[in-house]
Length: 166
Image (cartoon, rainbow, N blue to C red; front, top):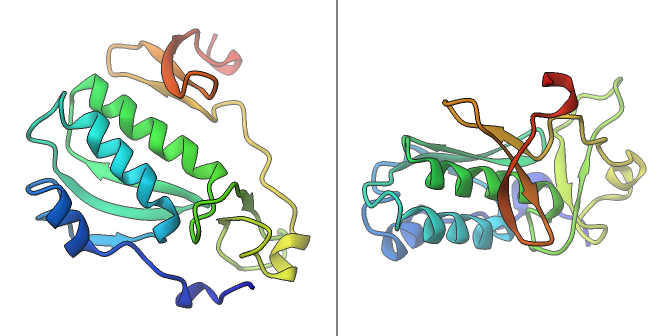
């Protein structure tokens, strides 16, 4: 049954601080659903060995996907971050099942949300899903190397730039 946006369970900072001492201690803002908790845990587990001083400042939803604000400059940790953010566009923020980014019609003011059919309201199900743009799934490092998320290997692989940047 669909839930109003304010009513769904969210990740608690205390749980992340207990599980990952030092990583979330100074986080100012955490406001994402528990459906994305496995993505957050996987990000930290993958990034922490490469950057033991990893510090996450914020976790939030923007345009239907997870955003992680972290101060790491380590490429492997940044790739783990990109992977979690990209994968969140296919995972229901409420329950973690397969989901779709629900984009409101242009004449409506509403949040984009990544929700499964069970947690999307009838209205949200009628919105259709977001068309992924030509940059979706890509990340560029500061040295100019491009990476793209590959779902068959669940990893960020070196890549040519998207067609728009060639």
